[in-house]
Amino acid sequence: MTPEQLAFPEGCFKGLPRPNGSHAGVMGLVADDLMPNVMGWFQGEEDETEVREQIMEVLDDFHDGYEMAKELEDRYGWDADSELVDVLDGASFYGPRKKAVMAWIRDNAITPKLSIGQVVKAKQGKYSKEINEGEIVKIDEGGIYIVMIPALGHVREGIGTHGCCLAWEDVEALNPAA
Image (spheres, rainbow, N blue to C red):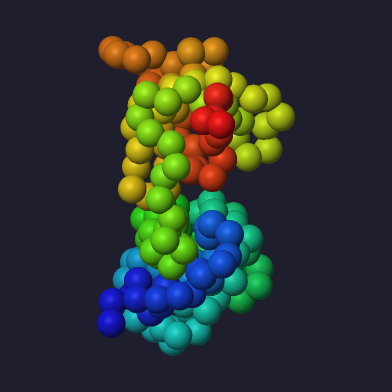
């Protein structure tokens, strides 16, 4: 079994909301990616299982290498230095989070309800109150619409921002069919 299959077995997201970076499976994959470099920093002198557990604990609270290193030092007595900060700054949630979302899409048989060229309304971010009007310019298989919103300065061609990445479930058709 691959690490993804272990982290996100078939059916694990059935009926649940979209997973985020705090999901244990996501953090497990992030920790697994960090482990070779962290163990290299330790020079093989520590118990790998214990080190992974400690990294998982701080990943839940911090996504910044310096903050993680400081917390590992405070909680577990690690002798953190700039090299460890650099290693921990390499923590990437993007790939693991996308794998979790792909498993969520699989488990819930989710498909995009809107199409390219459709005019939509959406908030720019999850916590934004402002609703913007835009056009879907791309649909990503990872549950994301790319929405060009002229009011935010997005451009169709050339240099500049071409759109916002918005979750399928956060975008609505401006004039839904009756």
